[in-house]
Image (cartoon, rainbow, N blue to C red):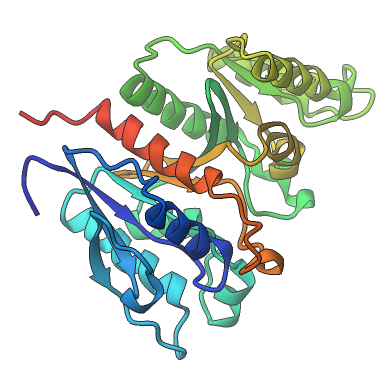
Length: 305
């Protein structure tokens, strides 16, 4: 490994899903955005890669006795920590297969947070439309109790650190979507906003909480019209309040970014899609966008001198 290169780790995720298929497509068609000042290390089995290009392969044998995507991510994460990698790009995994194999983590974000011994936040980025999830892979009934002041404070701090470090935004404008329909209607259809969130938002210098239908339709409209959103980042209380909208509006081109780790991690905004594997239906653009986003963001913070 050359000292003056920006080092990035790459995994294709579940070898039976479309992650491997689209990565092979990207490499075979010379679409991978290689840059002279980067070294990309692919963690996977050489027998599955049709074209290596300028990638450096770190062999992870395909072993039917273990979950391959987990072993690839584990080694990639350990290498990122030990060798001071700037970024990690991951393909989609199957959470049910992880659970069946005995892994307790609900997703790659949770594993990365555990391995790095830090809190990780899930941020979605589509051009200049940024959305952070305040809760992730938990049951809907657990959301209200999970959203305490400490959770808000931690998320905002991690978000501001990311915005300043990678996007050079020193005083970001951040908007909070309410939990309940219409933001609770002043306590008529939910009291979280009235009793707690209004004061928390003021204390943390964020706008809101706004009615969810207003905040998501207005920011989505700005994205579709290629305009700058009113706010630098939007906060969503729970996973499915906004993920279906993001996936639909951006056609899966939003990039999932894990922030708060010692390195930057990006991933495409789609799953394994077993039902279309091998049918030449899988779109390579979301994975390619995740790759480009990681390289572009890491370029902003690495001093190569």
